[in-house]
Structures are given as structure tokens and as C-alpha cells.
Length: 503
Image 1 (cartoon, one colour):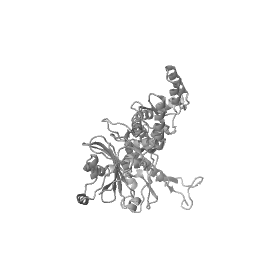
Image 2 (tube, rainbow, N blue to C red; image 1 turned 90 degrees about the horizontal axis):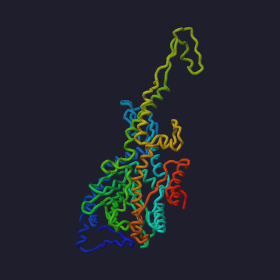
Image 3 (spheres, rainbow, N blue to C red; image 1 turned 90 degrees about the vertical axis):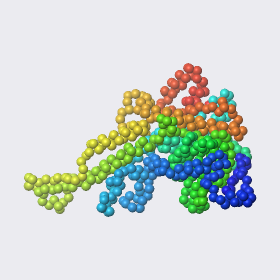
Image 4 (spheres, rainbow, N blue to C red; image 1 turned 120 degrees about the vertical axis):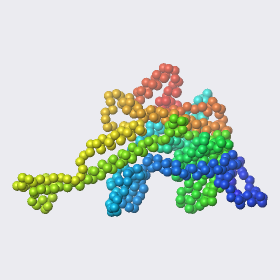
């Protein structure tokens, strides 16, 4: 039978037995994930979910990541020793030698990754500065304790870097999940610092709260969530172990099943998943310790696609046209000269500063070959860049590239008008990402309350989220706004906090 470990902190143990009936049952083949039935789940649904996590959606997630990252892959053939990820979107006439000519090389390729810098700009505008969680507890002492505890947990989870990673993954894949965990220790006592938030890579899976399991997977750690009609929701994380480690200890994958009541861990060493650990859900009994941040919401309430997917067709077309233009530029350098009526033309080169004299009035030097300028092609490339600007909402100005006059307004107002689309998207995303941050923070406070580390009631666990300004101006507008708030009766402490002055 499977060996199940337990810790003193969760006081969970599955006793083993040596009875003849138990030994007979242990020799019979068991279905995969049979032990999930102990926590009210269907083994068939979990097995089907894990299989789906490694199915066709895997290639889709890999494609989204490749178009963002544009990774370089080393090759041993051809004039170049590497290939770029976005080359997969180029037509065959550019990446394959001409038919019947095995010695010919593919054309010169130009790959300009217009996706990565746009995603980076979106993340910078969303969480380029620290985000502050403010408690709405009625008394000041509780507010201070709540805010200090949350700050410690989020700092242990990675702080601003963790939020930026979550925002990056959410922009690429359309959503990102955050799981609140507690580090395991031998002792029964725990500390606030033992809680942390684990950012689950969306390439690992797609969490749902109703209906069949839906997966969005890619290496290295497929994950997802499923809803079982009989027992409610569970979250499944399936981790494929890398090759060297798998070869060392025969471990091929790890599967974690999280339910509102339990947490199970399965190891697969080639003969199927075997339960190796089980414990009670001590973080959020009765609910999943999972908060989902979506990049945007679709018309039916489902998470909409990320920012990469709509840009892929335009990126492929841009790379194609840039490669075609590079080919034409190459042809320009191979122009040839045709001399007519010139004696000795084959004995001396023709170049700048060379003067040829002849008595032949019909003599001439003509150029041929190469290619002339193509204004329509240049216009098409400019239109492609404009289309990318419209689809993403990120103009080059967002990264400091100024290609035209900003205007006669003050710099901050002019930037806001120019970046209106990006700022509007950022404010919309702050609603969805902020909701997930508040949910995860609420799970943290609930876990601290259940463990007795920081007892709070529902009112004391109410939180607000303060986002910094997206643009850095001269500060005068912020001071005028602060002065207007003071005249309206807003407490001075709150105004100074918004301005960034520590209290």
C-alpha cells in the first residue's frame, strides 16, 4: 500500500494494516489517484484532469510563451548557430531552401519582437511601484497589526517581485493563480512568517469553479483546478520532473490535490501515481486557499485571452515583411554594371572617383540587378506597427521613444492624453488584479485567525488597496489634489500616506 506521511502540526495519519484482507487488496491494481476518494473526489475525474493537463492545450501555452520570450535555440547547421522562437510563424519560402537546391541556404531573417516590450510596459504601468494594503479595522492598534502581518507575509513571498511575476504571467496567459501556503515544520507551533503566497504558473493549468476540468499546460509544472459534482472544488497541480532528476531517482512527476478540507501529494515513478503525503487543509478550512487574478473578463464572465494571443498574427506579418525587405537590401548590394563602348573596361574597376574617357558617343555604363525602393512596402510595415499599437494599447512613447511632438500642454497632461489607451487598460486591470490581491490577503488573515496567531473578526479583516500613480509628474498636481482633500475634511494622515510620506 502507499506510504502516507503526516506531521504533528496537522495530526493527520492513515494507519497501515497487515491483515490478510489488506494484503490481498494491496496486490490488486488500483485505479490512478484512487486515494482521492477518501477526500470526496472522483479518481476518474482527477486522472482525466491530469491527462488533460498534458494534452493539446500544452502546445497552445507553449506557443504563447515562445511568442513572448522568443527564446534562442542552438543549432549545428546553417550559417547561423541559433534559431529564434518566432521563426515558427514565418512562411516556408523564408525558412526553407528553394526546392531542388540542397546547397542553398534559407533567406536572411529579421525577427523583431514587438510583443515582449509591450508586455513589459503593461506590467511596469500596473505594478511598477509598491502596492499598499490598508486595513479597515475600527481601532488603530488592530490596523497596525493587520498591516504589519500582511506586509511580512507578502515580503516573504517575494514582495514587489512576486506581484510583477504574477502580472507578467497574467498578461501572457490571461490569468494567474495564487495559492496561500504554510511551510511545514516539525514543531506544532507556527509563526506569521511561515505563511507565504505561491504564484502558480498559468502554463501549469487553468482553475475553474464549475463544470469540467479545463487545462492550459506547458512544462515544467502543469497545474489546474477541477470541480467535482459531489464534493465541490479542488485544485490540482501536476509537476513534470526534469530529465536529470527523473533519471536519478526514477521520479517522473508529482501531483498535488488541494481540496477545501485536505491536501494530498502523489509521486509517479513509472508505475502510476502513489500517495506519499496527506494532511488536513490548515490554511483555509472549508474553502480553497486559491486566489485567481485575471487579466480581463470575457463577455460570459470567463477570463479573456491574455495580451499575447491577439498580437501573434500581426507579429508574424511584421517579421515576414521585415525579412522580405532585408532580402531586397541584400540584392541592392549586388548591383552589376554593364559597360558599352568602353575599351579596357574589363581591366580596371569602376568605383567612386574613377573617370572614363572615350571617343565613342554611344558609350554608356548602366546598372542592373538589385531592387528599387518600395514605398508601398514601407507603408505596409508602418501600418503593421500602428495595428500593434492599437491592439495592445501600448505606443512606443510608453517606453520613452518620442517620434513626434507631444503637444503644447504641460508634460504630465500631454502624456496622459497620449497614453490614454494604456492608462485606461491599466485602471481596468487594477480592478481584477486588485480583487485577487485582496482575496489572497483575506485568506492570509483567515489562516492567522484560525491558527490563533492573529485573532480578528470579519470587520477587522476588511482591506483596501492603494495603487500608486502610473505616471511620474512634477508633483504639483498631486499636491493640489492633496490640498483639496484636506479642505474637504480628509484626515491629514491619509493624505500624507497617499503622497508617500511614512507615518
